[in-house]
Amino acid sequence: MVLLNKRRLLLPVGLTAALVSLVASPSAQAHGEASGGLIAGVAHPLLGLDHLVMLVAVGTVAAALSTRLVLWALVGALLGAVVGFGGLAVPAAEILASLAIAAVGLVLLAPARLADVAGPLVSGGIAIHAMLHGLEAPRDQGSLLWWAGALLASALVVGVTTVLMQRVPAPLLRRAGAMFVVLGGGLLLLPVVISA
Image 1 (cartoon, rainbow, N blue to C red):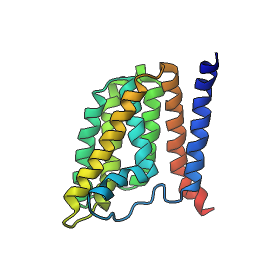
Image 2 (cartoon, rainbow, N blue to C red):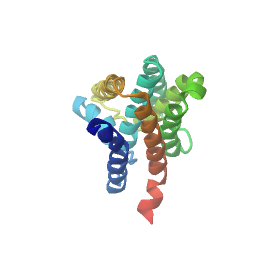
Image 3 (spheres, helix red, strand yellow):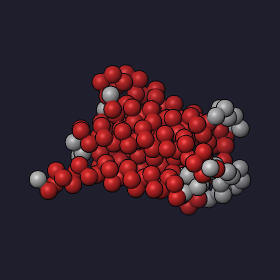
């Protein structure tokens, strides 16, 4: 009975902690130029709250539906990184990055209806985030090490999340979906809240 009560508290406590982090972190979606090197690359996807939340969302949806979604994410990451590093950008990419988190959350809320589009949706969402990484990636001798570090950190977050979430009951995964919808919306509204 105590274990069941603790599981029910998981979503509200997690959601509260995430929202406090959003409000307390004015740089949650700040993207600029990154410094080079392996350590900077490893740190980069972990320090951008929007990127970190997206990686956890992908790992969660992969655990809920299919680990093949990790391959969809990898394809999206490679395409987005190439596009961004090439200097191309999608208009309103920051908004799309936040919406991508919410969209992955919706897949968790309605897995039966959205399972057919989960792969392209995950790939597209990760592509937007990777494009933002590509735009800010260093363009010096440390670039290759930076990319290796960013890929390593991203893969570890998605992989560890997938493994951990495979042990979580399906109802809690759906609650996590609701949390990602709220977090995606929170990241979308964060610039408005900060500027007010």
